[in-house]
Length: 200
Image 1: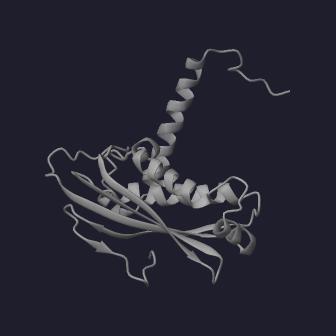
Image 2 (image 1 turned 90 degrees about the horizontal axis):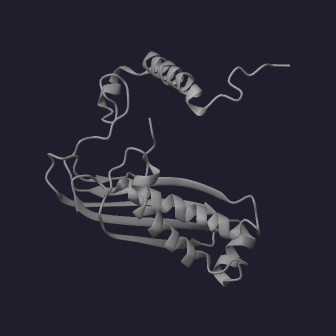
């Protein structure tokens, strides 16, 4: 029988173990960190994480658009189109979920700033050729940081909601191609994804 030395101990007894684990993970991280990692603004000089200070940045208009695809299969796709999914209106529910998710991005992604969104729009393009739905989200704000993460979060949660609404019909549904399409505003300027773009 394996004896657990911490069995019955108060929660604080685990803190030294957790602290040791953090130190170990930071050591491993530095060992594998690429030479150009200094360009990652969420890392401090010691390799820990930080929320970037944007206090000195001037506020400006920020926009971003992201997209993703849900490959449903024939039966689930037609249930969405015909409105016969057991849980109800799939696209309306996914649209609301995406908007709600965008507003909660800072609570989901640890180092994101809280952004006062001026607007968020979630739209759908039904593609009968491959029984898929292209989900697109556009976010806008006036502030000191961008809204790419809000747009990406909206798309991700909208896609997950489509899956949830249709999973009783098929478990083979595939969520794919979540990506940033465009952004504007801020010091880094405008970005438009090339149709041939692929991470190096």
